[in-house]
Length: 90
Image 1: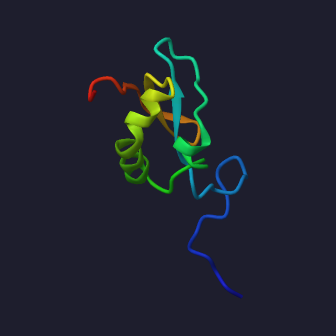
Image 2: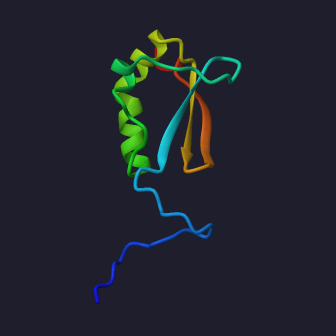
């Protein structure tokens, strides 16, 4: 019998997602914005907060061009922080 060090389930009984960190792209009023595939390049999640933050640091200018004014970071369904304006660095 083999044992995994990875948790097999969460409190709700669902499998723990490996890419649970994600950004929600928003306009200035907080409405969700869809971005072109070439900007998000199929990104649906990140394995860590650090990976998510590194990615946003690389693409924030492209997101601004797509109409994204701010972003909010989530771990699963939990809001970690945000909204964070993308205009501060421009």
